[in-house]
Image (cartoon, rainbow, N blue to C red):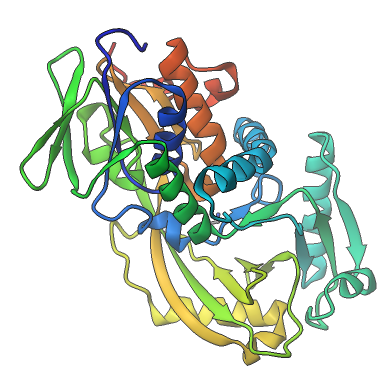
Length: 380
Ligand code: GLY
């Protein structure tokens, strides 16, 4: 893929995927790397909670996604360590694990099914009674009846991660262009660059489309493949003296899924709604009410927390919930988008896959299930 004609690589989008790709490409590929984004690190990647949860986010109908997510989770410790060394900033990787808790007998049965599904996939989890749970997390609500301990599901402070990635990319020589991409241009059979809202044309031999849910609007080859999936999320801060959870907590309350992700700083991130509302990022009062009420059913102590933020982000959803990675459309156009609920988790494996592709000319085996070419709109 990288031949004498390839001198300039443009990455469109400065979320976790675009930043990770730009950083890894600049480390390994001898080219000029440009990242185009009006405000890198300010989009959906900054809104999310930073769960690294291949197991508790797993769905039995998505085994390929589980494999990819497990692969990326396994890469995370080295990725975070490399990033800390390259940036001089702590990316906030936390390994305390996750507890999925049950509030009803039905929930407990559902956790048993999840445990069985994960055991069949060779993954260790442990079903716990309410006493054992409260020994682990004394702040849990008295109504919690049992739970599933999943030590392999971790978290990262997504905003610290984004700061580290931006610094590491900068230090690796990535050039930042603070403008918005309007369209990826081509000459019919290969890309020529990126037209910017400000009117300029950024010439490039390879363009990595990593603009999350906006990727579909950048080039006809991606049209209709990615859509925005809204998520509202709140941030709380523990006041001094409050007993705080150590692990990520998850539950289903009145049929709604809720997660609570604690940071060592005292922050608690509670999410998230999920519905399709176009590109709307307003936060509804009903969403905040539901998130607080559901979180309170798991952790009554949140009454003593300060409410510091309510935001909405747009997950980039694909047709099958798996990302689009690799070549799509004209030569030189490379997708790195469609990560839906798993963008932070899948950043290491995506950046490695894209960089390997640029060096070797074919997608590595570990990313084949996410090949962008699986959708029929691909032009060759
Ligand atoms: N990864 C959780 C979410 O998207 O809400």
